[in-house]
Amino acid sequence: MTVTLQAYPDRAWNGSIASISDALDPVTRTLKIRVVLANAGRELKPEMFGTVHLETGAHVALVVPATALIREGNKTTVFVYKEGKPEQRSVTLGATVGSEVEVLSGLQAGEQIATEGAELLKGGPQ
Image (cartoon, rainbow, N blue to C red; front, top):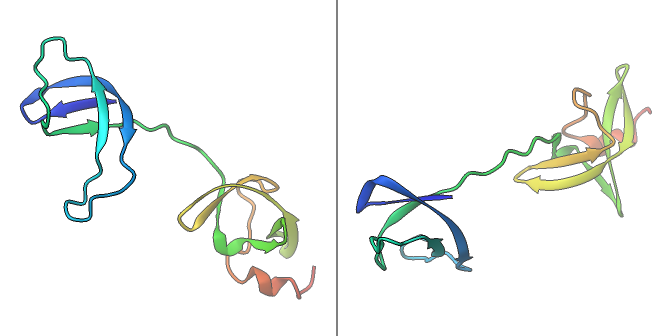
């Protein structure tokens, strides 16, 4: 993580986040964080404004729309089209981000699935 400050626009400091506030300020729409920075030259002063630059790692995953999932008890399935016919298959899920859900097992990249109306296929030919 690096921090740049308005007072020193051509410099950057490496640091780490020590704490993050629990709530967004409703008036300023800001979130307070405590960042630990080396300040050997004593250039950094309390209440200075700056920008925190975070690098996040990419997570490559197989995801499906939540509308493709059929949840029955503790079992989750999707309909996969095999030779043009829908086949119900169990899947193991991971993280949910927005309207997409990570599939950890039970499905391969490139397989065609029913993304909507999967509940209707339960009563159809299998």
